[in-house]
Image 1: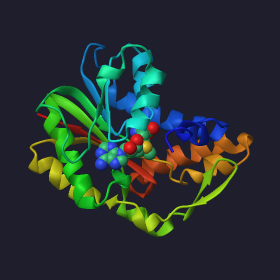
Image 2 (image 1 turned 180 degrees about the vertical axis):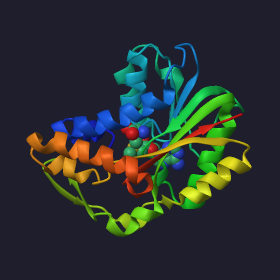
Image 3 (image 1 turned 90 degrees about the vertical axis):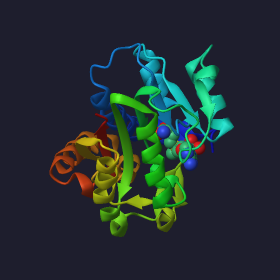
Length: 235
Ligand SMILES: C[S@@+](CC[C@H](N)C(=O)[O-])C[C@H]1O[C@@H](n2cnc3c(N)ncnc32)[C@H](O)[C@@H]1O
């Protein structure tokens, strides 16, 4: 999966649009952070976000359980990057308390084994984030369970996707966890109200309309979007 991860997801007009929406969300969360801070992406995969941050002048740390993903990531980031790419898992992050000035995880929490694991993952992100710093987590909300498609675009065709296996979380539970950790929710935003699949199947000419529709719908109904983002502030 690691070898063709980027090709199947981000090498088309729709894929690039999907990537841009996610990158924009990350950049809004980072907004104004100086370049010399320690950043962590947990579940960095092949490193598309790390590469964006590196191109902006940051030196982010990436963590992932998959060595194959980390190898591709290291090639993408170039010389000297391997030492900032760490093998590990979200439930027990291999980092010190308060080690980072910003931590984030995107497209990972829906893939872990259970909601309890995902919540422990969020707690760990909060633990390794320093005082006065922020955490960005992206997840799939329980609100969307019933309207998720069971197929997704893969390469030129379709692949089956057993959504029953997606780990979905409840925003109220995340809020409770955040507050129990003494933190505050800065904002909750949604993306891809129409889902991601339309970006891969609609003609290119319709993508701006789809993007506009999704961004308006996301403002009105963030938790009903296929992806939801929490920005968390540590006191
Ligand atoms: C869909 S990819 C997303 C990668 C990257 N965040 C992105 O959006 O391009 C999911 C990644 O999460 C990683 N992952 C799966 N289970 C994990 C866990 N328990 N802890 C941390 N990362 C995990 C996978 O190895 C994979 O690289």
